[in-house]
Amino acid sequence: MAKRKQYDLVGYVYDRYSKDNKFKEEEILKIPGILFDSLEDIDKFTASFPSFYELSNSLDDKYQKKTNFSIRIAVNNGRYSYRSVIYNNPSLSEVIDKLKEDTITVAGKKRTVKLYTGSSTYFKDVWKTVEKKILEEDRDWFSQVFSGNWYLTLINQYFNRDRFESTPSITILDLERAFKDYGVLRKYLTFKENSVVSNLNVPSSNIPVETTIDKKEVKTGNYTDDIVLGDEEDDKEEFFDEKEIGMMAGDGDVPYKFTGRKI
Image (cartoon, rainbow, N blue to C red; front, side):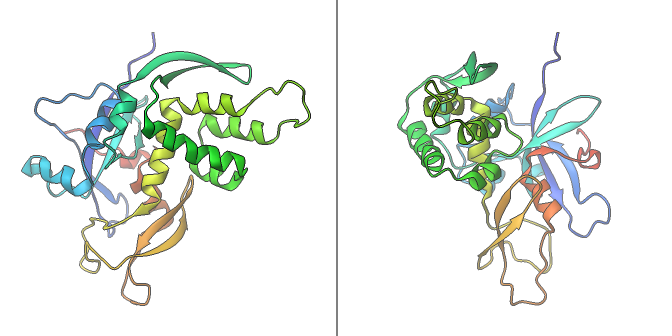
């Protein structure tokens, strides 16, 4: 029997000046009356807050010095993977409330997923955005958004299909059904949210919490983010390196030294 995964909402302090582990004081957030049994439970909770700051201000005083939050998933052998936190998306609860574990068959392969079974306007609008990219055959966009996700393989199969095949092995309808997998939808939503990281709350004597923002394209481990930086004409400005930004985004496995300690 497979071991049940453990999901925790954690806070930590980012210390840019540390020579080894820049991510310190990791701590599970204990919220009175609230227990998280799944990734969706955490998403539903955090998505009701407009931003990191509103969530932080709602927590106990002992968490106020945390500079970022992530979702930590216990994997095995004492290691964890991390996922980005979703904010400012109250409509997401409509999707989460209509999830059902199901087995779908796409392109001849079966996959057990948490499938969205509703028909909300919110989901339809999100799908229209993705469908437009499919019709434009925007391969680069899909590579950025769904890197490491099974949906990218499916998309590439569709793009590389035999267009003269009388009975297509994969269709737009197949792609829409596969997009109803919550893991796929979440991959899109976290990419969209992390594409602009503003007002980074970090301990620094040089960078104010709020700055005049510019966009600069920075490649991280899995995708390209529009990371908000300060005024590049200021010679004293200090920026995060690519690896650090990727880790702060919180998607995927991270080095063991970032696992912190459970308090």
